[in-house]
Length: 248
Ligand SMILES: [Zn+2]
Ligand SMILES: [Zn+2]
Image 1: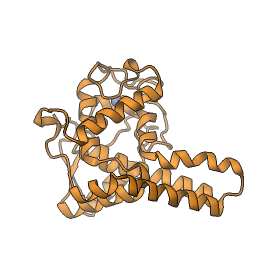
Image 2: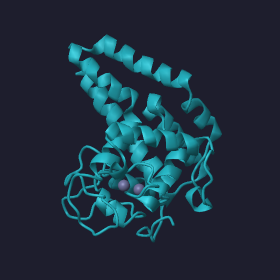
Image 3: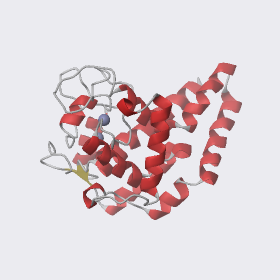
């Protein structure tokens, strides 16, 4: 029971910062927030993603490249140009590191207003921190696991951020249904997205890249959207009015 709760908790907390902060804020700027809240969510990203911390800066830039070049040779992660899932994940990691270490020259539109906080970038993206988080997850399992097979879940904890990314970047560009005609292979992977916090409505999202609600049809409930509305109502964030537009 403790393991199940820990797994579900880690899955959804990590997913929340990914969809809310990395995807909808850092990459797409669907809403604004002041520097205090930006640092607050930067810190939550480090705490919730832990061993698999993804830099909001590198994620934001890489994701803009994905939208600009979806399913072309320049797409940072296209199943069309990858031999298999792991090949795609490996290529993504290389491009991610190139962006993070400023090894590729980019048009300013890909980096404009993408948040960057050197302090968390430094403590989040280093092996000491990653191993410490991984050790903490492992100790929790050693303490609370009741069956040997529960340990098979540990690698998902270690790689939670990239696992969430890969599910959408692979599955939602291969399987699912289409609401809108788009110039790439983006699909709505799940009709009712209880697993990926709305990220599954990827065809809708590729059509309207700046729209904070990823659901369109009545059954396409986006669990992140009510949270966004609440944070907007209590003035933590400010939703952009014309949010059907993309960032570019
Ligand atoms: Zn996509
Ligand atoms: Zn996007």
